[in-house]
Image (cartoon, rainbow, N blue to C red; front, side, top):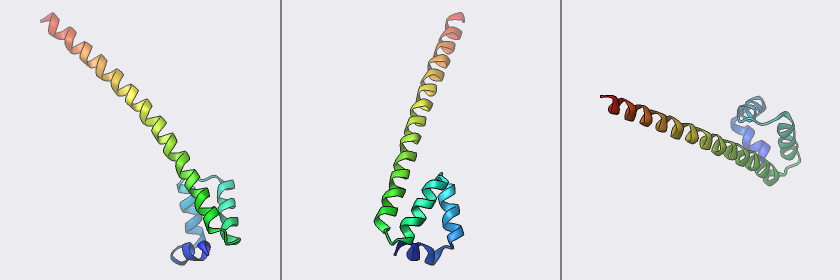
Length: 88
């Protein structure tokens, strides 16, 4: 059973804290605990996998935003350097 396997090395409190640190909602944590209690290991794994996918998608969206800002900053610095070169 996943609950027993996971909890052998961690207390239930540590498991819950880990899930919170991973950005899991209270609802998701309760659902995960219920799957563990019912012995539905695969369902618990799928639930956490979906949450991981959601986090990864969000990270990729944020990375695209950073890339856009980096490009804008690059263009602005390039333009400023070009203007300074022309003035000399």
